[in-house]
Amino acid sequence: QVQLVESGGGLVQPGGSLRLSCAASGFTFSTSAMFWYRQAQGQERELVASISSRGRNTNYADSAKGRFTISRDNGKNTIYLEMNNLKLEDTAVYYCNVYVYNSPYWGRGVQVTVSS
Image 1: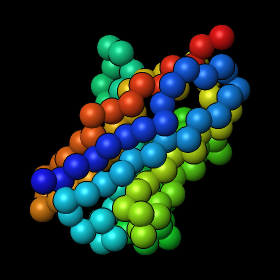
Image 2: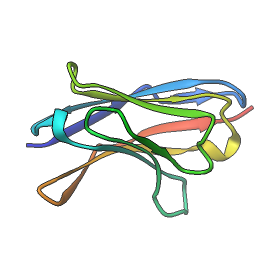
Image 3: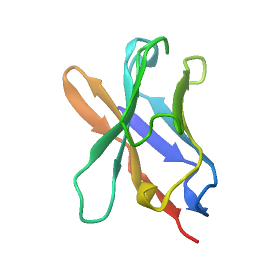
């Protein structure tokens, strides 16, 4: 089974940093593009960042550009999301995502709360 397990969330002050991890298994990680999404309470899920299979290409939501960095370690079957200069509006549940045989798979999500 495809499994995605996020970790690294928590409570952070505005301007602080946090590094999320997503451990993946059950599919060929090294050939799969990976994605980070987030969903704030009462809002729809939005794409935050994506990364190609080898990590050569990355894309970010406008709200994340310049502050967030997505990366991956294919040897560890893990992707990361480094979040810097966090803002109140970054508060959300963050999800790791992958498409396997055209079907989406999601982690359980990890809460990130930015509060003073």
